[in-house]
Amino acid sequence: MTEAVRSSITVSDADSGTRLDRWLAVHVPALSRARLQALIEAGHVRVGGIERKASYRLREGEAVEVEIPPTPPEELRPEPTTLAIVHEDDAILVIDKPAGMVVHPGAGRSTGTLAAAVLAHAPETAGVGGPRRPGIVHRLDKGTSGLLVVAKTAQAYDSLTAQLAARAVSRRYAAVVHGRVVPSEGVIDAPIGRHPHDRVRMAVRPAGQGRRAVTRYRVVERFAEATYVEAALETGRTHQIRVHLASRGHPVIGDDAYRPRSIPPLLEMDGLALHAASLAFIHPLTGQRVEFAVSLPPRIERVLYHLRGINSNRGQRRRSPR
Image (cartoon, rainbow, N blue to C red; front, side):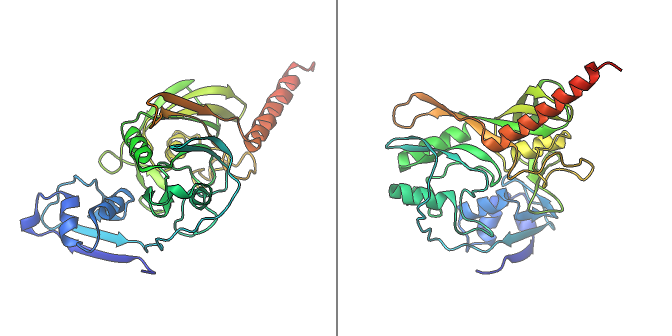
């Protein structure tokens, strides 16, 4: 398949009240239930032009629009690449991903991925999880750096994915955002779904049109025009921290995708001022809770150094005699 396939089917009276996922399994039999579920979650299925959950009950006369994107080739070739390995044992691999590296192949990127580098480093990950995502249980955006864990065995994969689903994995991020964040700590509980007019971006959506997303944050340091915050994920939606903070008027510095034109850029930087600084979970083999942490990368340290310099200069000017 080289191009996306789109179709629209009208719900009959006999199918009224049927769950969306079950209806799709009957009317799109060429795709597996797992593939259909993935299409729903990615926003490729709409009912009357609106994204719906798999559990949505269809009504007679509604038009179900299905977009099936091209399927990338299944084979993933190992690509030997130097990895910043924080921890490795027989079950897991904890990596500090650099900004600019894509985690797994997708639209527009088939080589140079973390997945291919993992496969070269640990060939036993082949067949763990998906064929193009060997051992990958969660991901980071291309422009985001920091910690992620890879499963080296099927047992470890099942354990880690179950922990993620149960919200038992602790993921804390360091972010530098536009504006002065108030209050000093809080919770953003707002559903996230595909942007209604831009399929590449996500957005905070009205109730029933997105999946629940919860981000906790606390202010670490404030500057004249920016704030350094720590954010913790309770859920793991695509672009969650970026979307949630931008929805409050505080897009991550360097994130042109979610920075509105009304907010001028503060700094030019390679990647985002967003870093997965710590990660904790139950080790699949030992049953003990383990925690890993890494320092801020140079690109974010440079941002903080610049902002602190601006603050210091402004303070000196205020104290200078007139």
